[in-house]
Amino acid sequence: MARPKREDINDVNRRNDLVIAAALLFKEKGYHGTSMRDIARAINMQAGSPFYHFATKQDLLFAGVEAGLLACLADLEAIDPKALPPLEYFRAMARAHLRCLLETQGGMVPMVVDEWRYLEGPNLEAVLAIRHRFEALWQSALARLKDAGLVRRSDAMACRFFLSALHGAVRWYKPDGPMSPDEIADELVDWIRTR
Image 1 (cartoon, rainbow, N blue to C red):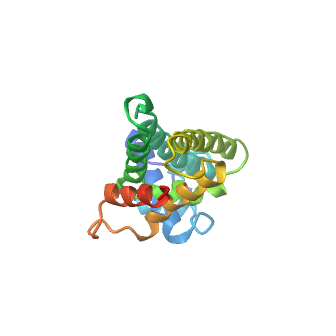
Image 2: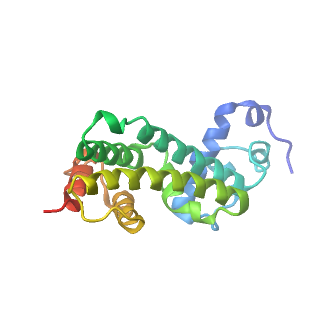
């Protein structure tokens, strides 16, 4: 194996480049269909150089999924539930979450939405812990809506249904389409409301 170039090892941005390249390739070829060599080739890096940043492809996947989840979670946690009535709080969360999913650059979303399932061991446990934080936040927001008489259910299944609808928009949304992420979020919020 050729010795890695100095710029492949020392450039901090190369780590981010690897994560973005992996996300794009995982979307195109799937996690199992993508090799570390493929990822290195995608950013003109020598085949062995990614291993200076990530010990395994699993570690690379975890880095991307964790970063994407934590960034979105931070956006949601920044919305103060006490500052808004229940419906407006829920709407603000839906808009923020959908913006994270639909406006994120670099192809990271499919890695976070789909490829996380290939995580194993401590990596999977860490991501599940973050996902539980998401669900708890959303379930609390749904409970506020239920208490206000605006939705019928606020249980874990209702929460999963709503999050699945949000995440499903990733598959059909078009940036030049007729609706913005905020408009789609508003439609989803109106859809779950009790009539």
